[in-house]
Length: 198
Image (cartoon, rainbow, N blue to C red; front, side, top):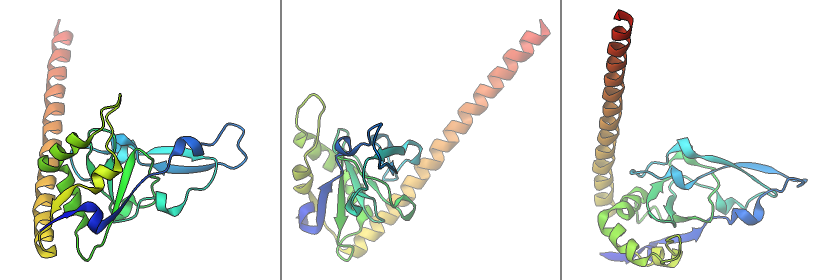
């Protein structure tokens, strides 16, 4: 079965923070941790390394904060998605992102995040990106993205497999980094020993 994302989810953009930014002389200042565009990588996991702090001149509405099960999508190219885990709750969502909130009885949110990051969906989204100076995806185009909707059981099985593959990629990436560091250490040790022997 094929459905549009808008048929099974609500989609909205984040807060236009430029208008709400606290000024130097603002009486009321509220600091929030915010999802930046750099928090998006090659997986559906949010990269916490790049979470920013942002100070607003007023409190933001609850709808502009992440909740477990949300899917955030970059509106600026590349249009990748991340899945919000429990530990990612309460982060401010800015207007360069769309948040997708789904009916969990029908859909596994992780399945949707993986689907958006798939080559198939990415090819479709690239066609929809408006050609301005900075390529941007419109929320309307994201809402119209069609996805194949297997049963909820099949979605969960697929998510388990994709989670496992993602974990394996992360472990291999860590192993490569460790090997590179080891190689660098060995090289530096040899260079240092040769300097001392001269």
